[in-house]
Image 1 (cartoon, rainbow, N blue to C red):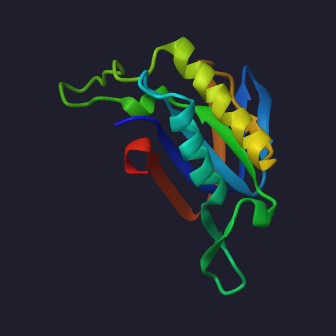
Image 2: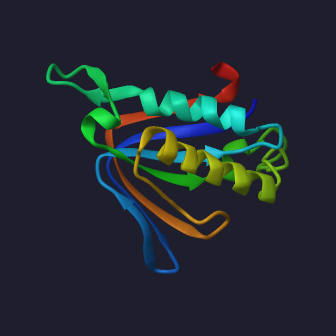
Image 3: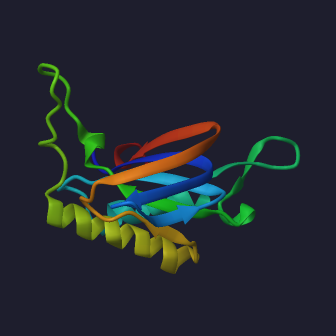
Length: 151
């Protein structure tokens, strides 16, 4: 399995680092982004395109039919190597399948910038490898797992 992203539809979300709010959004998506060494810009582009067009906000009839831009939503993107936790042996997860830090950071930043440049979305982000405190109010709750193997 390759790049993984957890999408949470939120009415608000923020990330605090060292006691300071680093990123904050109202309506939109909180993205938890995990990268593997095999991932590249094409992988990230496919996932970003899917996310930008994902219709999971309710329309006037209560149906999930609206995309992020249609609700003037924003994104809070958080790097998340723990999405590749391997729990097969024992009770302590292994993270050996997560991407090497330099590669993962570069692709995570590229992914965020692609969403900004290609779709004009406001993308707030955490700091790669920082100790982050993430708050969110999940709307629905709606939580979707995307991975590049299923696109």
